[in-house]
Length: 263
Image 1 (cartoon, rainbow, N blue to C red):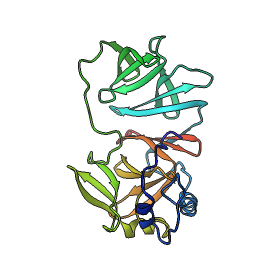
Image 2: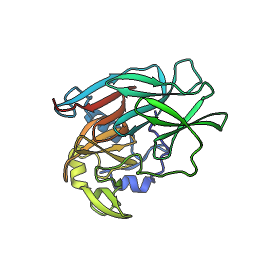
Image 3: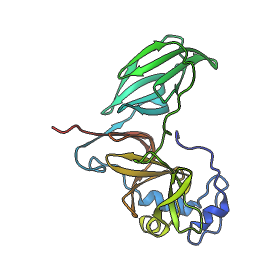
Image 4: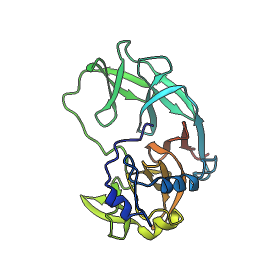
């Protein structure tokens, strides 16, 4: 599971967000009945899940997925093909991978410098550097210094998000200049989850096609935000998103959504 990171939320904070919570799994901030209810409530992604003029494609690839990034509205993924120990990079568009050829000694890849540069190497040593542009990788010299852009997962305004503080009445906060601004109330979260949950837990935020989205890593559910209301969109994790592209890992497949250009 690509998005499943270390679970660090405390049991006390998680239980404060859940009606009737008495115990939690040692690996999860949510009790298993709450996880099961959220998963049951979340719909399966369909062709119309993201509105008109959005192309939804399913990618059933025999790969070991690594990372996804969107640069200048091009969606890139890094992965290990089946039965291969060489990591590869490709452009993903409408459910089809378009591999980008790198040097033959490139065993491991990582995004650097505002995700516009690929560091390629072997056994922990970076051997080559590439500037990615469209469907090409241009060999470059080692950058003189790193460049840092916006975080990987952000709201439409460029801010990050965080779970609301227990007892504050906020389920989800927008982090603006290191200050918290509530963007979803506990009551709205409770309505969206049929009373199962009143606060976000282990959350990250993204934007796509004019809407903000929040992914809860545990149990892996995605909410669409609309003012002070929310609705469950699907099971899964948003791996990358932008104004026009989104990649979701869901039910052991990958779902790509792309906003079609006006005719």
